[in-house]
Every structure is written in structure tokens, then in C-alpha cells.
Length: 624
Image 1 (cartoon, rainbow, N blue to C red):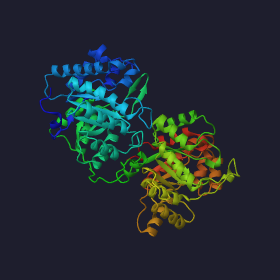
Image 2 (image 1 turned 90 degrees about the vertical axis):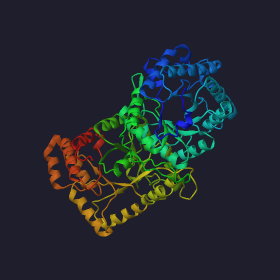
Image 3 (image 1 turned 120 degrees about the vertical axis):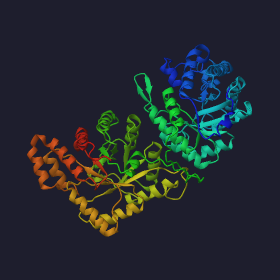
Image 4 (image 1 turned 135 degrees about the vertical axis):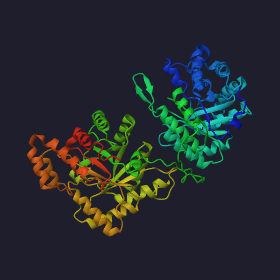
């Protein structure tokens, strides 16, 4: 039994270090995911005790009982609903015995309580009163057996967690309660709640410690923890992240985050203000031991963390979650993306394989075109969502305004956001008269520059074009088109000015084969605007495939001009023209260093392997 009461311990300057994953360790020890982990407290206590012991030896000061799913709803799936009290008591007795055997007086025992595994009304069929009764049954057994605190964790439904807090106050009065939510990759709960709202509600409900666990990993949880602290700066906080996003390898789930990475984030969480720090899925005693060493180091570095202190409202306290594209552009990194076209059928497997090839070659992301050349293809939203979920690879959704009225535009944008798509490239789109359906509707309500303003100044602030609330702000990063080789540069700069005023975050430039063209544009822009162009430009590059391909681009595609010297190189290459085209694309992009901040590779005729070869020619020359 710890000599200092739990809440008193949290007033110390150094955070309290909790343990890591129980399920991960049991599974590594041979327990199937289909087994009831909680029942092991009765049938195989030695396996559970071994995990507790490993975490204590790693330096944990808080051990969780193996009772995360020991409520009657989850136990009913294994026919054990009548053994709720027995399993929870056994979990406490087992963990307490290990703590006592360690001869340490600084280890606390938390009764682990997870969600019921069933949905509450209005999104499910379980009445809130029934849920509270189920929580009270489990929590009452844990408290009676002698835990030091109740740890409510991995809740994705804010209302369910509030019922669990209320049940704790009823069934275990006087026992401290830690309440932790888990958030999806967009930093919202599965039901759409923001961290600020969650923090305020948990604090007002009487939780002694509020926090976040599970999720995508330490980086995400640090963002969420900051948002929660901003909303309720007087609260006490906890953070217990997963070891990154899991990946299925064979029959095992593997987590990528290393122990050294967790050690660094232990100090970050401490700097943000977490009083309880630990690990969730995928973390092991090695992770906890590394965190212990970091926290105990006498000369440990203090990470610089900018803490926001104002409470704000639901529109101002949205967690800042820039996309990977936005982060790299802000950091000055050279971004490499490749355009892919959706399939002309409902079978995306070949496209998936091509995107995986590009990912392995080093592409940062892929751009998914919307009905290029006005030909019927699969919805680009579906393709983006498919690639992001299958490859965990960020995408840029091309969003043409042509053929959409303003009502449909905004509805489509909300749908894209709901699918997890955050990067947009807003363009006019190809006219339908050149495609499969020349008689199709070709009208539009809003030009690209105006739509950028709708997204950045309306939707990203939580309202639609008419000023009506959309509930929560979107978090789009928006790109625009730019032709730096336009015949009328002054007119192009005037159009760009509108796009910048409306909030464009980056531009994708029309294909240029001569770096001098880009230099002239920059010079003229500075003459007109009185300042250099700072908008990140991702420059298009087409690896030429043949002389016929080069002649077509030069003569029939507006805005593309290919120097005679390059034409002669392609002609002289003969059958090796594709390889020469790759070399030329690499040379042009390297020649643009310092003038643009990325490469947008457009593979000819679906030859994605050539795009991968262009990336290979770039190597690390443009990184940093």
C-alpha cells in the first residue's frame, strides 16, 4: 500500500509514471485475442502477475488491474456475466499481491474500467440507467477489494464516460477517479466531440484527473492534451498513448513507436502539464523503463512547448491539426507528390498497387484527380479514402468547381472531411465538351478563387457560405492552380493575388521545362507586389514518354512549352525516350531548387513506374 494518498502524490513536481499495455503483453505471451483476458485472473493468474511484475521492475508507480473488460456486457460474450464481482476481486487481489512482493511503498493500484462494449441511447439500445448500473457493479467490486483509484479509460462516447464517472461517485464514494477519452485521427471522438468540450464536461462531472489515452500515438495525444489544458487549465491531467498506429504482421499486431521515442514524449507530456503519464496499446515494460530513465535523469532536457492559456469557445479552441503536407511546407521541406487517376471501374486494386509503388519510392503523398479530361471515373473521394485507409498515405483531393452548384459544393466538402480528407486542390476542372459526355451540365456557381475563400474563411471557421453553423470547423489545407509561365504574367499575378487573399495555403504550378521561366515570374511578382512570393509552389513535372508525346504537349496543351534542346534529346533517345524523359524531369526539378518547394509528378499514360524513377533521380538532393 502506497504511503502517500494518490491525490497528494499528484501535487509533486514530477509526474507519476503508470504502466503500459496489459493486452499486448498477454498476447505476446501466447493468449489469443479471442480469449477473455479478464478471466485469466481466475484461470491463469501467473500470466497476469508476470506482466504486473515486469512493469513494477521497469519503474512504474501505478499498476492497473487486469479488468478493462470485466463488465457484465463484455463478459456475457464469453458466458461469464455472472462472475463480474469474482473476476474483478481476483484482479485486485492478484495485482496487490505483486505490489506487496515488490517491497515498494510508492506503487498505486488502479482499478481499470473500460467501455461496456454496447452503445448507449440515442446511438444504441442501452438506457443510460442500465449503463450506470453495469459500471456500478464492476466499480463497486473493485473498490471493495481495495484499489487506490478507479481508472476509466479508452472511452469513445463522452456520455458513456459521464455515466461511468457518476457510477464511481455512487459505488465508490471517496475513491479518486481518473477519466480518459480516446480520439480518432481527426482529434475528435468517434461521435465528433472536440477535446475542449470533453475536458470541460469531465471536469464538471467531478473527475479528479482528466486525460486522454489510446489513439494514434504520442504526437496526437500531445496535441489533444494541449487543447484540453487550454479549455480547463485548473484541471489535473493524464496521458497514456498507444505506441503509434498498429500494423497487422502475420497474426500479430505490431506497433512502430520505439522506447526512445516514448522517453522523449514523457518529457513533452511533463512540459505540457500531465501529472500521470503511461502507455496504452503496444507499449511494453521497455517503453516504461525508458520513460522512467528520462523522467529521473537529473539533467533531463525540458522540451519547448507553447502552452495556450485562454479558454476560448468551440470555434477558437479547435485543436490545431495541420496535415502532413502543411507541416512539411511550413518546415521548408521539399514535397514530392504524384498525380493518380481514379479507375474507370469499381475495381481499385491496380491503383492501390501503383500508389504503394510510389509510397515505397519515397512519394510524400498522391494527388487524386477528379474526372481528368472529363472522362467518367470512380469518385476521387472514394479513391482518396481507400488509399489513406489501406496505405496510411496522405492524399490531396482535386476539387473542381465546374458542374457543381454552391449547395452541392459545400455538401461534397463536408462529405470529404467526414472521410478524413484534409488536403484540397481547388481548380476549375476540364470542360465536359472534351470528354465522354459533351452534353453534360457544365455550369458552376463559384470560381476556384472564391471557393478557396468559402473553405478557408467559412467552413474552416465553422459556418457555411450563408453563415449557418456546421457544428464544428473543418480543417482543410487548400491549394490553388498557378501558371508561372503564363503569356500574360501580370494577369496571372492579379489572379494569384485573389487566391492569396482568400487564404490559399499552397499552389500547384503548371509544367515548366525551363527554370528561367520561374525566375522571371518571381522577379515580376516582386516588382508588382513589392515583396517576394512566399506561397509554397509545388511544381508540375511530366516525364516525357516519346517524341510524339512531347510534340503533343508542346503544340496542343495550353501553357506548356518545351525547349528545342529537350525536343532533340527526346528525338535522339529513340526507344530509350522514356528513360531520357525521366532524366530530363529530374534535371528540371533539381534546377528549380530554391524557386519552388515541391514536385508534382504527372506520369504519362499511367506509367507510375516512371514517376517512381523520377523520385529516385531526386534522391535527397532536394530534401531539407
